[in-house]
Amino acid sequence: MVEAHRTFVIVGAGLAGAKAAETLRAEGFTGRVILIGDERDHPYERPPLSKGYLSGKEERDSVFVHERAWYAGADIELHLGQPVTALDRYARTVRLGDNTVIHYDKLLLATGSEPRRLDIPGTDLAGVHHLRRLAHADRLRNVLAALGRDNGHLVIAGGGWIGLEVAAAARGYGAEVTVVEPEPTPLHQVVGPEVGQIFTELHGAHGVRFHFGARLTEIVGQDGMVLAARTDDGEEHPAHDVLAAIGAAPRSALAEAAGLRQAERARGGGIAVDASLRTSDPHIYAAGDVAAVDHPLLGVRLRVEHWANALNGGPAAARAMLGQDVTYDRVPYFFSDQYDVGLEYSGWAPPGSYDEVIIRGDAGKREFIAFWLKDRRVLAGMNVNVWDVTETIQGLIRAGGQHDPEALADPSAPLDSLL
Ligand SMILES: Cc1cc2nc3c(=O)[nH]c(=O)nc-3n(C[C@H](O)[C@H](O)[C@H](O)COP(=O)(O)OP(=O)(O)OC[C@H]3O[C@@H](n4cnc5c(N)ncnc54)[C@H](O)[C@@H]3O)c2cc1C
Image 1 (cartoon, rainbow, N blue to C red):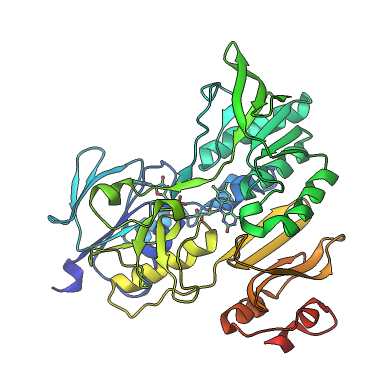
Image 2 (image 1 turned 90 degrees about the vertical axis):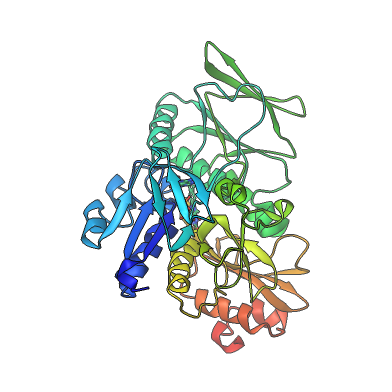
């Protein structure tokens, strides 16, 4: 078929979707590109929603991937405020919320993920929040400013990245903050207890209270307003607002209903894709938060909920849709900003996978690189207020060689020399 007569449809107008559409055009695709999203805003980046935009330092306009007019200029048909409600793999069509049916030759699912909900009494109260969308950030920004003005209390369920970034933003407004976390340290599932402790100290120094080893069991309210948050060990924390930051789940219902192969739920779920980001249907691809990739480098099926994975995975899927030879084997990468601490994390080293953590630099001054090792091989590295080392850290992970832990820990030995 002549390319100009082909239609590529992308479901999910987030970062992965927008970057895939952009790449189709950059690679010279002349057919129809249709980008469909259920949000009313055109594609935007989410990291500022818990950092610069939430803290009031960045403008709303700065979060968008492109200006709205860019899409028409690139001949990308943008359907916003339109959920895709059904996928018919045999007819190769998608159905929109308004019942429009669109035929595709190739389809990309870039539907992202959504916040997990607290399943406890009181979550219907007005002061209970989630943070995923720009509209959530608009609201939370006002809430934090009001809490700061009135000495109000914010209880955050979950000491993961979003919980901690919001804690930092809330302290910036002057709000009282308590983080309730079932594990003994924040970020436990990502960085483990050794480095988690550094984050306990960082936030403690900024006045955040932690309640570890506990879960919320009830949000107590009166007249529709939050009064307190109760935990399973019988404590009650005063609260005017509560943020549920207990992780995200892949938005894979559409793919599941269409019978596309899914990754194991116990390992994070998501749409199972091969290293070229192709699903179990050869006409359908998936990228970004929703895709569980059979990772050629790490040898595991992995669903990565990070910005860089959407930024690079969308384009990789677009190239694969065009028939190019694609192997998506990027080292997982994440960044975060909290107070005056900026960090980048590369690799994958959940607790249980590593046997040693090496600190290179000064953890007390929060200027260091942490390495997670298994049998002296670098599984992951995190640079904190140390810059321009990500490529080298990723090189160490990729090379997979064994290293003397003392050499890794010694800041006087140039990192590059270890490659
Ligand atoms: C507050 C916040 C802060 C973050 N900070 C960082 C950070 O500092 N560093 C980092 O690396 N990562 C960060 N992330 C993660 C990063 O933003 C995500 O990994 C990234 O947004 C994933 O992009 P995506 O395109 O896969 O999904 P999304 O951005 O979720 O986009 C998917 C889009 O598809 C839409 N959609 C879903 N189903 C349908 C349907 N059936 N029909 C139509 N549309 C649909 C969704 O509404 C959404 O608009 C953060 C995330 C959040 C929420």
